[in-house]
Image (cartoon, rainbow, N blue to C red):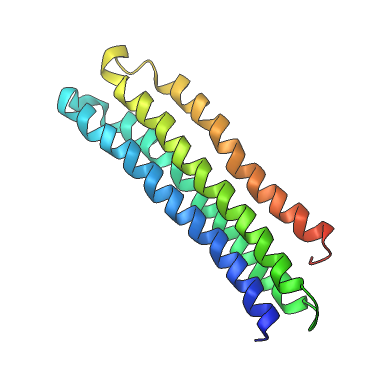
Length: 155
């Protein structure tokens, strides 16, 4: 593996790490609200699991970025130039998108979970729809990484 390929791989790994860290933080925020809600209304467990699991998807987006960089981009990089730094930079962009998307999605889900007892579970659908808006940033992060890799000529 050349230095350029190593930098590119680091970019992919960074994207995955951003997704993993953000998902862990987002899920923990939602799950913490879930524990408090369960003490008040144990019958909301199913709704809590649904909302608390939503921030997990950004991990998959980071994994997709990592796999694309490892299998498609890195093997075809030129041996000279700034290609490694370019792919690393694109990977960092993906990492930031996945990190913040999942953290803030966890915040939205935590708010929905906290209101489950008060609304007798009726807030579930609304909370999921609002969480999907934040999810869109993670999806766009994945799309923008793929577009940037393509436009830069790495794919």
